[in-house]
Image 1 (cartoon, rainbow, N blue to C red):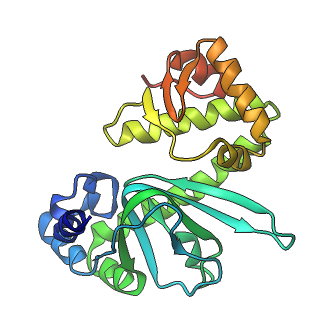
Image 2 (cartoon, rainbow, N blue to C red):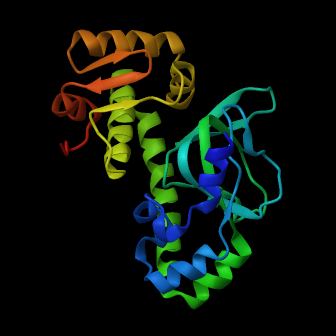
Length: 242
Protein backbone atom coordinates (compact mmCIF):
# COMPACT_ATOMS: atom_id res chain seq x y z
CA UNK A 1 0.00 0.00 0.00
CA UNK A 2 2.87 2.37 0.75
CA UNK A 3 4.18 2.02 -2.82
CA UNK A 4 0.67 2.72 -4.14
CA UNK A 5 0.46 5.89 -2.04
CA UNK A 6 3.90 6.94 -3.25
CA UNK A 7 2.91 6.41 -6.87
CA UNK A 8 -0.31 8.35 -6.32
CA UNK A 9 1.55 11.32 -4.82
CA UNK A 10 3.80 11.53 -7.90
CA UNK A 11 0.94 11.77 -10.39
CA UNK A 12 0.64 15.05 -12.25
CA UNK A 13 -2.08 16.28 -14.60
CA UNK A 14 0.47 16.36 -17.42
CA UNK A 15 1.20 12.63 -17.13
CA UNK A 16 -2.20 11.37 -15.97
CA UNK A 17 -3.56 8.61 -18.22
CA UNK A 18 -7.09 10.02 -18.15
CA UNK A 19 -6.27 13.71 -18.67
CA UNK A 20 -8.30 13.69 -21.91
CA UNK A 21 -11.44 12.85 -19.90
CA UNK A 22 -10.94 15.35 -17.12
CA UNK A 23 -10.60 19.14 -16.80
CA UNK A 24 -7.21 19.47 -18.61
CA UNK A 25 -8.66 18.16 -21.89
CA UNK A 26 -8.75 21.57 -23.62
CA UNK A 27 -5.63 23.08 -22.07
CA UNK A 28 -2.13 23.68 -23.37
CA UNK A 29 0.77 22.22 -21.39
CA UNK A 30 1.58 25.54 -19.72
CA UNK A 31 -2.05 25.94 -18.67
CA UNK A 32 -2.16 22.41 -17.31
CA UNK A 33 0.75 23.32 -15.04
CA UNK A 34 -1.36 26.12 -13.55
CA UNK A 35 -4.24 23.71 -12.95
CA UNK A 36 -1.90 21.10 -11.51
CA UNK A 37 -0.72 23.63 -8.91
CA UNK A 38 -4.16 23.71 -7.26
CA UNK A 39 -5.05 20.01 -7.56
CA UNK A 40 -4.67 18.03 -4.34
CA UNK A 41 -4.09 14.29 -4.50
CA UNK A 42 -6.10 12.62 -1.76
CA UNK A 43 -5.06 9.39 -0.17
CA UNK A 44 -6.31 6.13 -1.62
CA UNK A 45 -9.89 5.50 -0.47
CA UNK A 46 -11.16 2.02 0.32
CA UNK A 47 -14.53 0.43 -0.42
CA UNK A 48 -17.12 1.87 1.97
CA UNK A 49 -15.25 5.12 2.65
CA UNK A 50 -17.12 8.40 2.20
CA UNK A 51 -15.84 11.15 -0.04
CA UNK A 52 -18.40 13.54 1.45
CA UNK A 53 -21.77 13.40 3.20
CA UNK A 54 -25.03 15.22 2.59
CA UNK A 55 -24.99 18.61 4.30
CA UNK A 56 -21.19 18.97 4.35
CA UNK A 57 -19.91 22.41 3.35
CA UNK A 58 -19.02 22.57 -0.31
CA UNK A 59 -15.36 23.41 -0.81
CA UNK A 60 -14.06 21.01 -3.43
CA UNK A 61 -15.04 19.04 -6.49
CA UNK A 62 -13.47 15.64 -7.01
CA UNK A 63 -12.03 13.97 -10.09
CA UNK A 64 -11.95 10.18 -10.02
CA UNK A 65 -8.63 8.87 -11.25
CA UNK A 66 -9.34 5.19 -10.64
CA UNK A 67 -12.11 3.20 -9.01
CA UNK A 68 -15.75 4.24 -8.75
CA UNK A 69 -18.15 6.19 -6.54
CA UNK A 70 -21.89 6.11 -5.99
CA UNK A 71 -23.92 9.09 -4.84
CA UNK A 72 -27.20 8.80 -2.99
CA UNK A 73 -29.68 10.68 -0.82
CA UNK A 74 -31.61 9.51 2.21
CA UNK A 75 -35.27 10.51 2.58
CA UNK A 76 -36.99 11.46 5.84
CA UNK A 77 -38.13 7.86 6.34
CA UNK A 78 -34.58 6.56 5.92
CA UNK A 79 -34.95 5.31 2.34
CA UNK A 80 -31.79 5.42 0.24
CA UNK A 81 -32.04 6.63 -3.36
CA UNK A 82 -28.97 6.25 -5.55
CA UNK A 83 -28.55 9.26 -7.81
CA UNK A 84 -25.47 8.32 -9.82
CA UNK A 85 -22.42 6.17 -10.42
CA UNK A 86 -19.09 7.84 -11.27
CA UNK A 87 -16.17 6.30 -13.14
CA UNK A 88 -12.55 7.40 -13.82
CA UNK A 89 -12.32 10.81 -15.48
CA UNK A 90 -15.68 11.97 -14.13
CA UNK A 91 -16.23 14.83 -11.70
CA UNK A 92 -18.21 14.47 -8.45
CA UNK A 93 -19.68 17.31 -6.39
CA UNK A 94 -20.70 19.85 -9.03
CA UNK A 95 -24.33 19.78 -7.90
CA UNK A 96 -23.29 21.45 -4.63
CA UNK A 97 -22.35 24.73 -6.28
CA UNK A 98 -25.79 26.34 -6.03
CA UNK A 99 -26.37 25.69 -2.30
CA UNK A 100 -22.76 25.59 -1.01
CA UNK A 101 -23.56 22.22 0.61
CA UNK A 102 -23.30 18.72 -0.81
CA UNK A 103 -26.88 17.50 -1.38
CA UNK A 104 -25.95 13.82 -1.33
CA UNK A 105 -23.57 11.22 0.08
CA UNK A 106 -20.65 9.99 -2.03
CA UNK A 107 -19.53 6.48 -1.13
CA UNK A 108 -16.60 4.51 -2.55
CA UNK A 109 -17.60 1.30 -4.35
CA UNK A 110 -14.07 -0.07 -4.72
CA UNK A 111 -10.52 1.04 -3.92
CA UNK A 112 -10.31 4.45 -5.57
CA UNK A 113 -7.80 7.19 -6.27
CA UNK A 114 -9.23 10.70 -6.07
CA UNK A 115 -8.00 14.18 -6.96
CA UNK A 116 -9.64 17.05 -5.07
CA UNK A 117 -9.87 20.51 -6.59
CA UNK A 118 -10.67 23.52 -4.36
CA UNK A 119 -13.55 25.17 -6.19
CA UNK A 120 -12.73 28.78 -5.28
CA UNK A 121 -9.22 28.38 -6.69
CA UNK A 122 -10.62 26.61 -9.75
CA UNK A 123 -13.12 29.44 -10.29
CA UNK A 124 -10.36 32.05 -10.07
CA UNK A 125 -8.10 30.11 -12.40
CA UNK A 126 -10.89 29.53 -14.92
CA UNK A 127 -11.26 33.30 -15.32
CA UNK A 128 -7.63 33.43 -16.40
CA UNK A 129 -7.67 30.37 -18.65
CA UNK A 130 -10.36 30.43 -21.33
CA UNK A 131 -9.85 26.75 -22.11
CA UNK A 132 -10.42 25.76 -18.50
CA UNK A 133 -13.56 27.87 -18.25
CA UNK A 134 -14.93 26.30 -21.42
CA UNK A 135 -14.21 22.80 -20.16
CA UNK A 136 -15.81 23.59 -16.80
CA UNK A 137 -18.97 24.74 -18.58
CA UNK A 138 -18.84 21.55 -20.66
CA UNK A 139 -18.66 19.39 -17.54
CA UNK A 140 -21.55 21.31 -15.94
CA UNK A 141 -23.56 20.86 -19.14
CA UNK A 142 -22.83 17.15 -18.97
CA UNK A 143 -24.24 17.05 -15.45
CA UNK A 144 -27.50 18.56 -16.70
CA UNK A 145 -27.58 16.11 -19.61
CA UNK A 146 -27.03 13.16 -17.28
CA UNK A 147 -29.88 14.31 -15.04
CA UNK A 148 -32.19 14.52 -18.06
CA UNK A 149 -31.12 11.10 -19.29
CA UNK A 150 -31.80 9.62 -15.85
CA UNK A 151 -35.30 11.09 -15.86
CA UNK A 152 -35.94 9.63 -19.31
CA UNK A 153 -34.52 6.29 -18.20
CA UNK A 154 -36.71 6.08 -15.10
CA UNK A 155 -39.77 7.14 -17.09
CA UNK A 156 -39.44 4.12 -19.36
CA UNK A 157 -42.34 1.79 -18.59
CA UNK A 158 -40.49 -1.39 -19.43
CA UNK A 159 -37.95 -2.79 -16.97
CA UNK A 160 -36.10 -4.46 -19.86
CA UNK A 161 -35.59 -1.06 -21.51
CA UNK A 162 -34.27 0.48 -18.29
CA UNK A 163 -31.74 -2.28 -17.72
CA UNK A 164 -30.64 -2.33 -21.37
CA UNK A 165 -30.18 1.46 -21.36
CA UNK A 166 -28.15 1.21 -18.15
CA UNK A 167 -25.78 -1.37 -19.66
CA UNK A 168 -25.38 0.59 -22.91
CA UNK A 169 -24.62 3.74 -20.91
CA UNK A 170 -21.88 1.93 -18.98
CA UNK A 171 -20.53 0.44 -22.20
CA UNK A 172 -20.27 3.90 -23.75
CA UNK A 173 -18.52 5.34 -20.71
CA UNK A 174 -15.97 2.51 -20.52
CA UNK A 175 -15.27 2.80 -24.25
CA UNK A 176 -14.67 6.54 -23.79
CA UNK A 177 -11.83 5.56 -21.46
CA UNK A 178 -10.22 3.43 -24.19
CA UNK A 179 -11.43 0.33 -22.40
CA UNK A 180 -13.58 -2.42 -23.83
CA UNK A 181 -17.21 -1.45 -24.35
CA UNK A 182 -18.14 -5.11 -24.64
CA UNK A 183 -16.49 -6.61 -21.56
CA UNK A 184 -16.21 -4.88 -18.19
CA UNK A 185 -16.69 -5.30 -14.46
CA UNK A 186 -19.77 -3.89 -12.78
CA UNK A 187 -18.50 -1.99 -9.71
CA UNK A 188 -22.01 -1.80 -8.22
CA UNK A 189 -24.18 -4.56 -6.77
CA UNK A 190 -27.47 -5.74 -8.27
CA UNK A 191 -29.18 -4.12 -5.32
CA UNK A 192 -27.55 -0.79 -6.25
CA UNK A 193 -28.60 -1.20 -9.88
CA UNK A 194 -32.18 -1.91 -8.84
CA UNK A 195 -32.24 1.09 -6.53
CA UNK A 196 -30.93 3.37 -9.28
CA UNK A 197 -33.36 2.07 -11.90
CA UNK A 198 -36.37 1.92 -9.60
CA UNK A 199 -36.53 -1.88 -9.79
CA UNK A 200 -36.56 -4.60 -7.14
CA UNK A 201 -33.32 -6.56 -6.86
CA UNK A 202 -35.29 -9.69 -7.75
CA UNK A 203 -36.35 -8.01 -10.98
CA UNK A 204 -32.73 -7.18 -11.82
CA UNK A 205 -31.78 -10.83 -11.27
CA UNK A 206 -34.62 -11.97 -13.56
CA UNK A 207 -33.50 -9.47 -16.20
CA UNK A 208 -29.93 -10.80 -16.04
CA UNK A 209 -31.23 -14.34 -16.54
CA UNK A 210 -33.54 -13.30 -19.40
CA UNK A 211 -30.87 -11.25 -21.19
CA UNK A 212 -28.51 -14.22 -21.00
CA UNK A 213 -31.15 -16.57 -22.43
CA UNK A 214 -31.72 -14.05 -25.25
CA UNK A 215 -27.94 -14.06 -25.89
CA UNK A 216 -27.72 -10.31 -25.29
CA UNK A 217 -25.16 -10.65 -22.50
CA UNK A 218 -23.22 -13.21 -20.57
CA UNK A 219 -22.31 -12.53 -16.96
CA UNK A 220 -20.27 -14.22 -14.27
CA UNK A 221 -20.43 -12.59 -10.87
CA UNK A 222 -19.76 -8.93 -11.82
CA UNK A 223 -17.92 -9.56 -15.07
CA UNK A 224 -20.24 -8.78 -17.97
CA UNK A 225 -19.82 -9.48 -21.67
CA UNK A 226 -22.22 -7.77 -24.07
CA UNK A 227 -22.64 -10.41 -26.77
CA UNK A 228 -25.16 -8.60 -28.99
CA UNK A 229 -24.74 -4.86 -28.67
CA UNK A 230 -26.96 -4.10 -31.67
CA UNK A 231 -29.99 -5.82 -30.17
CA UNK A 232 -29.25 -4.46 -26.70
CA UNK A 233 -29.03 -0.92 -28.13
CA UNK A 234 -32.28 -1.45 -30.01
CA UNK A 235 -33.97 -2.53 -26.78
CA UNK A 236 -32.52 0.49 -24.98
CA UNK A 237 -33.73 2.83 -27.72
CA UNK A 238 -30.25 4.08 -28.57
CA UNK A 239 -27.99 4.04 -31.63
CA UNK A 240 -25.37 1.33 -31.52
CA UNK A 241 -21.76 2.54 -31.78
CA UNK A 242 -19.67 -0.63 -31.90
